[in-house]
Length: 145
Image (tube, rainbow, N blue to C red; front, side, top):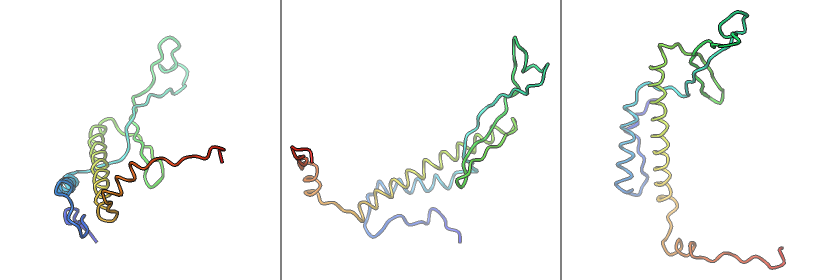
């Protein structure tokens, strides 16, 4: 079953602040606008082959082979590493940036939803909250027990 992110209801019974609702609506639109994405990061690596007479084994001025671009990420709890062709690095970088934006948007949405949940399910009355902040600390027994 497919759901449209924009159709998801993020409010429960109570009316939330307009600012929070507007920000969640903006996040939903931003999520829909994201294109292809991929988790992880790309690093450049240089290798030494170890063959005698190779440029990487030159005693005076060794020149390692590379750069080789390596993508590393974790998916479903398993680490994955793959080498990426040089001509694909820019396209992959765009997908990595989209994934970072996705994660940031989702983190913010969750943060706003938690705030809404606290308001909906754990209302605090102002006098009790003030009292908790001004309550003196408990005294420890003098004998250390």
